[in-house]
Image 1 (tube, helix red, strand yellow):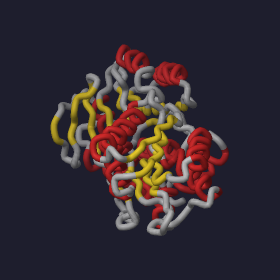
Image 2 (cartoon, rainbow, N blue to C red):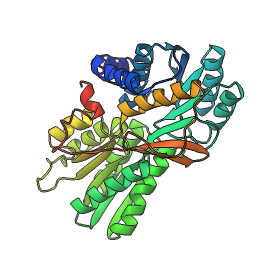
Image 3 (cartoon, helix red, strand yellow):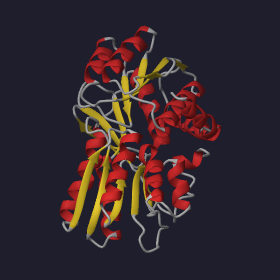
Length: 345
């Protein structure tokens, strides 16, 4: 983690966010395992969303009475993440929460944990197989569709759109891409879609935006699959090109993103970003820990509706709790239930 990222976390993560998740866990987790050793494995910590998520897991786990091992950061290396699972188990982890760097490559790590009778729960990004007690994520296809509908409506069904894709080796990247592109083909066939992979890398996203913005005078919209990774660079590119026009003004390039970070909220308030689909980071942590506590206690989870406005479905052999992801606009950007409003920055 860079010094800049550490500074971001120290400024943004608040006791209110962690406390809210802890109280929710305490109120909704009867007969759960208590006092076990928690491991947390993340594929990368290259953006604020992942940093806040990791710190939130640690804070909520400790406050729930769990022993927490240091965060295992694979730093973008799928092979290292497999090794991280081995190390966490060797260090005494009795349950592991994880965010996969690569949905397919993580499967051997899950198989290893299962061989050691260590339950695992996936949050944010889902695995392509293996055994997980639960996968907790938002419906990323639906998020892409929602972004598509906002974009198509804003452009009146015509124009050119740049889609800054995430890493297609991840389930989130594939789902956010297919949700958006399939919706465009079906509902807005007269819109030209330029799709470019960024691999969740800020420099790559910024470079692509620079190339497309300068070479496409008629560009009408940009879809960012992660505002945590892409938004600051895209805004700088538009500003340098003289195309950063306020929402509602002539010449404004419609901007929509996924994640709903504090920066995205700030730019919505300032009239630079039209909308963001907010990943429910706080709910990933809340329900991820809930399901892991239950799994450590020997509980299994069946498909069907939940008591928290979602539904458990089976995907790639594992139960998946598909949480709602609200759309954030200027009309609701100050809603206290949005995760970014629990942090400052």
